[in-house]
Amino acid sequence: MTKNYRAKVRQVLVVTLLLNLLVLSLKAVVGWLTGSLSLQADALHSVTDSANNILGLVANRFSSPHPDREHPYGHQKFEALGALGIAAFLGIACFEILQSAIGRIFSEAIPVTIAAPELAILLVVLGVNIFIALYERRVGNSLNSPILLADAKHTMSDVWVTITVLIGLVGIWQGRLWGFPQLQWLDTVFAFPVALLVFRSGWEVLQDNVPWLIDEMAIAPEAIHQIVMAVPGVINCHEIASRGLIGRQIFIEMHLVVDADKVETAHTITEAVEDALKQRYHPARILIHVEPPEYRKRPITFKPEAS
Image (cartoon, rainbow, N blue to C red; front, top):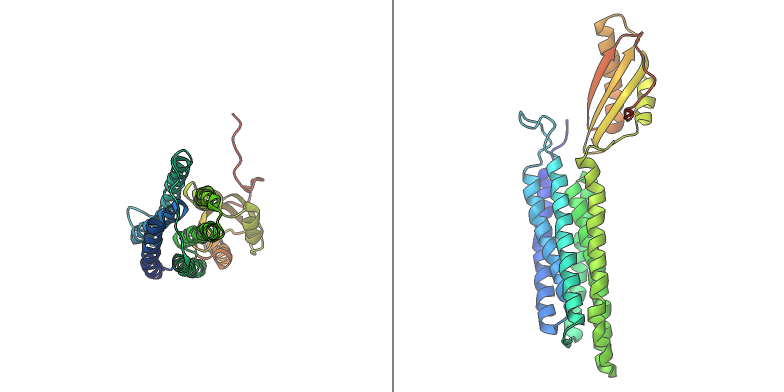
């Protein structure tokens, strides 16, 4: 039976939401006080962090692993949909950052005023972001939760964004002390890699979750075939299909030829096949179509039909 871990996921999302709101507030205040475009862009990135947590809580509410009448295969794809929402937020953030940076290039430069106290606050922000990313990734891996792993990736991108912004702001701070006002351009220049990091995070989230939503093959048919053929009484196994996410929920279908002349014997062999597959790919729901001994097919998986 699939373990319902939603309560733990919800707890992690609430904690990270509160921390992300703190990070957002600090970045927004310091960005407004200093006039830093890159820091304001970073604050925008943190807006998506908080929005992602809220989106994750909504997705978590509807992502029960247990089937019901309307959803006989469970509700777990709600989490993947939530992860796609995160990718959408990242795309919007990337567009906004690029638009602001390009606008700054063709408009009168706004001086950035940064000092040691503001930089110290940003170091605290960086530490909080690192904690959030590591915390979500650890719990996400232990629960195999797509929404937590996706949000951890997003937060880790925020760590690199903040580091990038800090490098630019330290350069501006030192430039002001050394009498190099030209370094003011670092703020605008560093806004572009911020946008690229945001885009990369969104792309990785898409890569992780789209295959699950479109029912891409979850397990190589050859791997399933090897396990099944090792079960005593199995003669042939073909037309193998699988979908889902290993560690969360796997659905496996196949046609099976067994060495049995009684229904009871065939049933015993198929149960042994199910046990072997569940031991390797738990949790799994397995559908087996038993065929007579004389009926065999060579292909172990589906192939595209000739047009």
